[in-house]
Length: 126
Image (tube, rainbow, N blue to C red):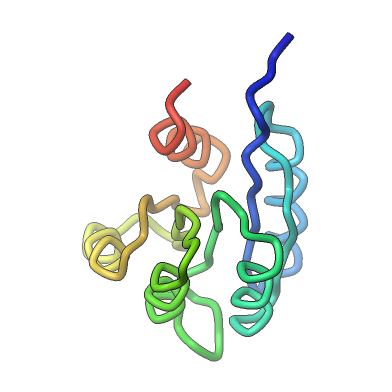
């Protein structure tokens, strides 16, 4: 019997279609549960405060505050989750900027399923 607790994952993205697909994918991952979703920066901050996820998947394009500022704010919190920054395309400069802001990993949306698997495996080794 597996007694390892499930890791709680919250997702913040302003694209309803991507948010729904990502939520469905996260809910299907063994060892992870969907802790909630947010469509705005304000909702994302409230979600992190209220559900205290282990991981926040955060769209770097989230308006009105750009995602890098939101990464900094989330990571400054008392029980900051691991932050997996989501970018539309893989770009080395975006990875560097996300890391400087405090993100723990960067996943490209065009390779979301594989990229998320790799990011979660590196954050939470079995």
